[in-house]
View 1 (tube, one colour):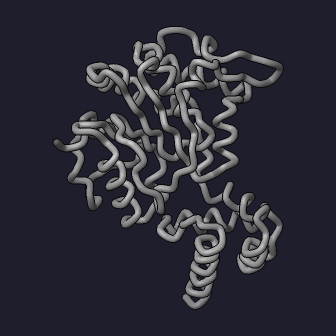
View 2 (cartoon, one colour):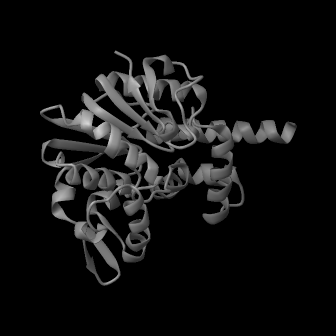
Length: 274
């Protein structure tokens, strides 16, 4: 117990430094996930222990940037959980199409795969020309990659199955240009997405939107931060707007969850209560 308490104190001290020195707030992230990610960072960055990592992070922005890669969600793929995108296509898009213009917020966009997936879906449903997609994350390296829209060709080939299962109406290769071992997303897709830094822990709502897609992010937050994030989403959404979450996430049993009602429960799509 003493060793655990000591380690938790070291974690607290490191998180306080990240907030005070680098202005990133991880203090309300799930401790189970943080312990695992910090242990991986200590090992892979070559430090003897967490205290040694802390000492370098406090004075070296380069070390912090490397640590940030461990603390933020980096797992992403195009059309991940195809049933979610199929539900959006079949059930949500017909309602979104009634608006003269649309705004979509992809929160925790990582390297951009989900934002481009939504752009493709909206293009195929005839809505992209009147849509602005805001894709946000706290990791500047991930945002830079997302804005470039360059992915390994092998990954794109793997995403084709997801795209087909999500109700794709063309060929995924129509939306990128292959060059050597990379695939570059087409300009019409990139032009409709604005990538920007935004923290669900410390920042406020920046626009009214019709759809928020924040998938596999809330599972890394503690209950208080989950409630705070849901509050941001509810404040950002227009009347009767839509919220999409990850397969293991829900608004149920969460403070602020009563601002949403089930829309497509199995697909984790909710609607803001009028």
